Length: 172
Image (cartoon, rainbow, N blue to C red; front, side, top):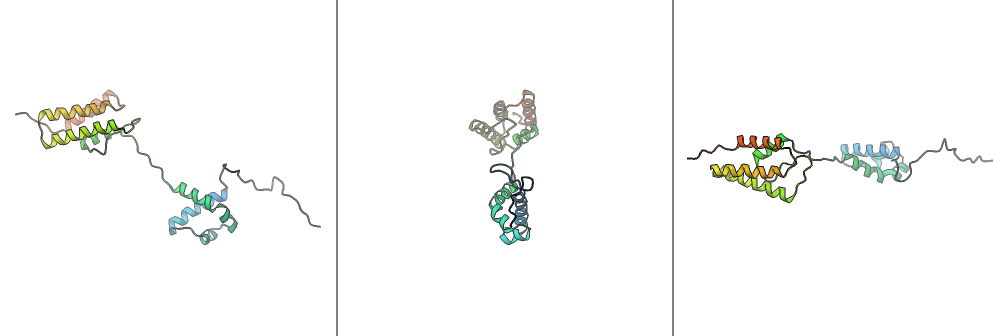
């Protein structure tokens, strides 16, 4: 007589439910896929067999492991907010596409226009230096800094640093 018995709950493998944790073999396959892709530029069925996965595991987990490998390989980059030294350096360089954005500041059309005005005034000062142009440049920078969420002391420090960096103009 054949002994048909059901595996007890202790011996039955516990597989994660849909939407829950990822199966450990799927994680292992994802890591193997990342390594194989880094070494050879691609992942074939035979490569996964040589890595120690069975055909059944490959059929079951290949799609999910591939998605997981891609997700794990993707680097999430976020731009850090500008510190005071960054704000001063960007104001010294005055490049229209590199506006200073401290923490809690989003790039808006109004900020881009205000920064563009400063960059234009700074360029005009370098092209044709005269005292009123220098004052105009500092006033426009001050108006831009007023739109940023920075403390008044930081604003004054930026203006003082730029005042020192701007070309000195002597009226004749």
